[in-house]
Structures are given as structure tokens and as C-alpha cells.
Amino acid sequence: MEKRMLKKVSTVTAAGMMMTAMLGMQVSAAESSSAEAAVKKNPMITKQITKESNIYAPKTTFKFTVAPGTAVPASENQEAIYAGPANGVTLDKDVIASVPADSDIGNEKITVGTTKLNVNESVFTKGKNAKPGIFRYVVSEVATDKDGNAYEGVAYTTEQKYFDVYVTSDDVGNLEVGSYLFVDKTDSKSKDGGVFTNDYSSHHDTLKDLTVKKEVTGNQGNRNKDFKFTIKVDGAAGEQYYVTFSDGKAPTTLVSGEAKTITLKDNETAKIFGLSETDEYTVTEASYADDGYKTTIDNVETLTTTGTITGNSDKNITVVNDKTTNSPTGIFLHVAPYIALIGAAIASSLLFFRRKRAKDMDID
Image (cartoon, rainbow, N blue to C red; front, side):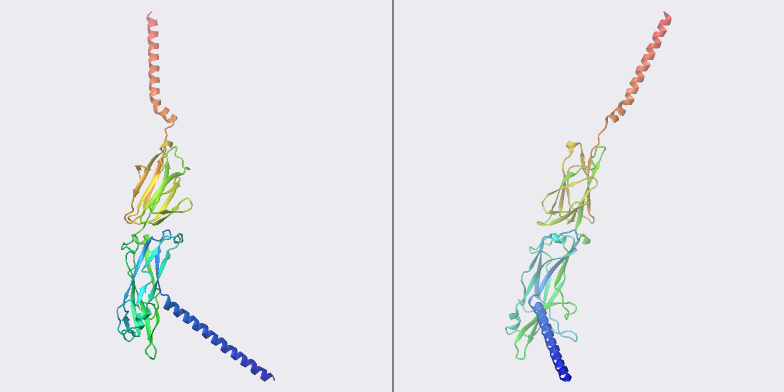
């Protein structure tokens, strides 16, 4: 009886294990099929930018091209690769737009967008020239925006990526596109991510920072006073510039062509990040002449300065407000010597006339 029961339990257990194994195989097959579908149906170009954490992404576009690759003959370690037929692979859109965003700040690598590669399967499976094999395309980034202009400060990548399409044949000669994906240029059996990365950073001497410092001098200069400024940067349309303050005030953002009002006290600074060579800055302090202040910017008596940052260094501007007043004590000390001389002269005269009078009295 016990042997019969043990046999039944063993049978049920074995059946359960077989079902579990089959289920696992089905899940694995489903995952494999899903992964293959992802490779096959959604190949993407991804545009990334590396930058400094306090710089916004540029307001620009990145353009891409797809062209048939070069055929590679078969060898001991290499399968034959054919040049891809015309129009076999196209771009869903050939431009990826980069737009500055709040999330850019604090990150040194950001993804600005993607675009899909379309594989026109009928090009590979229909027609008299259709055949099985591996067909190669080259995907490249153009070193300009969609209008043909290079964006200042962007180091465009010259990297070319290989995109291979695998076409298979069944026993009766029917062709089918099996899969397609980016492959490593040095090892066509390894996948590539399809990521194009550009640098937009002052590490390459393309972008500079502008620091505005406030100094208050003079015996009546108010070191605790907020002095009002307007700051502006004229750059590419839609470009943005991050601004931080030394006193811990909340950072702010400048939009190209739009002036912003800020305040600074003695020994405080405002720092504007990410100006390219043609970005023109304008810094203007409000007039405090009615309060007795004389304003100089970098030792020039003025309220406004404009310019661009060239060379290999950041730019520092110092705005000085001086208020010096001569006190009455100072004025008295200034004329005191003359008053002393006059007093001495009067004393001498009185002494002279006193002696003369005494002499005259003696004669009489």
C-alpha cells in the first residue's frame, strides 16, 4: 500500500517537474521572442550630450544620415557582408531636437532625444536581386544642424555606426528578414547601442563663465545695501544660461536676449555659466549718484559694460560703488594752520604796539 502511494507521489512529482520545465521553456522562449522583436522592430538612434553640471543643453538640432555600407568578403573569421540595397533602411526622422530643460542642471550626461530606424523588409525579400545574407548600412551624424549651421560650442562626433540586416531563406527559397541591429565596428558579432555622444563643455575650451562681483568702498559706503543690476546674454535663439550667487540665493536662468534683474551686496558675486565666443553679455548697474555713489566697472567710470569672452580663460567683472565724504573735522584741520598763522600775526602786532606805547610814555 505504501509502495503504491509512494509510486503515485513520485509520478505526480515528476509530472509537476516536467510541467514546470515546459513552462520555463515557454517563458524563456517568450522572453527570447520578445527580445528579438525588440531588436527587430524598434532599432533606435540615441543622441547624448556630455557637459558640465551647470550648463544647459544647447538649443539646436542634430541631423543623421543612413547609407549603404561597404561589402566585406568572407574569410576564416568573417562572414560575407553585402552592401545594403538602396532604401532598405530609412530614418523615421533624420533630425533630433535638443531643447534646454531644468533637468539638465546637475547632470553631466543627458539624452536629448531618439529617432527610429525603419527597415523596409520587402526591399530584402522581393525582386530579382533579393537574396539571403547580411546587409550593412552606415549611420552617421552630420556636423551641422538641420539648416547646415554648426552650433558653437558643440564638438560633433565623427563616429560612424554599422547597422546590419540579416535575411534568411527557408527550404523552398522563401526569404525573410530575421533581425537587424547596430553591431560593434570591431566585432560584428557583438551589438552596439546606437548611441551618438557629443561634447558641449568648457573642458574643450569652447564655453566660458562670467562672474560679476560687487565691491563697496568709501567712508560712507553701505556694505549691507542691495545694489540692483540687470544682466543679459545675447546668444542663439532659445539658448539658456544658468546663474548662481555666492550668498546662497536661489539660482536663476537667463534666456538669450532677455534681461533679468538681480541684486548684489558688497563682496557678493553672480556667476553666469556656459557662454560661447560670440555670446555677448551686458551688465548694467542702476544709478546711485543721487545717494552720492560713484560707480566704476573694471576701473572705468560707467554704469554699463558689454563684451564677449575670448581666449582660454573665464571672465571676471568687478563693479565698485564708492562713497567718500570729507567730514567737518577734516575741513577744520585743513584750514587750522592758516588760522594759527593769522593768530600769531595778530599777537605779534599787539606786542609791537604795546612796546611802542610804553616807549612813548617813557619819553614823555
